[in-house]
Length: 428
Image (cartoon, rainbow, N blue to C red; front, side):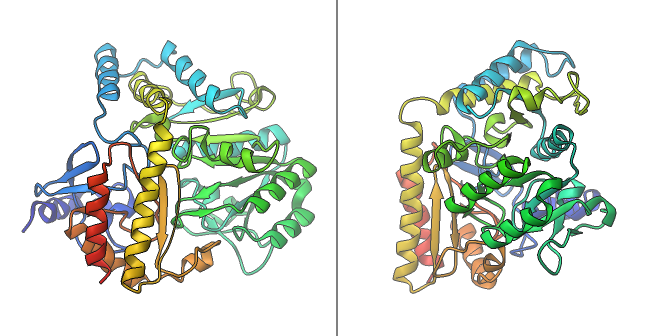
């Protein structure tokens, strides 16, 4: 029995399912999860000593690769000073200033410890600022495991959400309206029916939990117009895309395509913590004044903005601002996805790909899907075969066909070439 199997059996005795986050269990693809012992650069190593080219990158944060010297030095230095104080530090201010410098839609930001905490707080803030209760989310967009967000659409337009998790009462989800992603006519009708009672709309600019699906530009433009018209706040969930798809995040990309575009509230995570537990939400001063201790919307956290996580995030953000960083990262990602598409074409396998910055996704279908229902029709068995063939060849992709992938600055041309060679064999 391998060390991975031994550890998994041991883990299942003391941890539900043997994992502390469900997708890690490999249930979607079958087989034994790999228990990681260390990471360096573009690679991770498992308990059996196998090295993998890592395209998960801790689900996005490791944009510099594992163990980047500048980040490691910053974290070790901060840890020597102290892990946590439960009191303010100057580094919290520095990180907030760095984030605000790169995201002009925000004037103030509040640091928290997880993406789930940030989206939950952003919706509470929107409700407090508007005095309204209802909000819209989209099928296929994931915003953490807050009760009111673990819902899906009902049997028709404007049917309020029903929980998709046990333990979430119906009444908790009653104010959540779930719409189809990129369905413009449905969006228009939803605002016509409920616009004046909507506190906010929350959306991923590029959905990363139904693989990689962009919000269409025309859709985002109309969504911004409708929110403004009806007084609802537009919440952009950039936990995954923030500083991952570009220096100014996904909202910077849409601002280039839609004159004057900006969200009312933005949510960030992953890259801003550099791999440490750290996230944030921010908005204009006018909106943020509703947040305690200034206003009546309560939010607090013992470890919010802790000195080790802020050191890690600050060092990461400073590295990604160096000249040419995103140009090089984008070129690497494009090289990977173009190569995968070419290999699939050689083998006659239906395949479509998309990418932005250091984030990418592929589908075993001829055309890129635009919404959740189409994503669900992809060939699961073929993906599972592909996943395990790549894993056996030393390439670590997300163990589920509904997850995006990530390239880091540490990935070399040789790593990408090795990945494509493995894919050529796996797709035969």
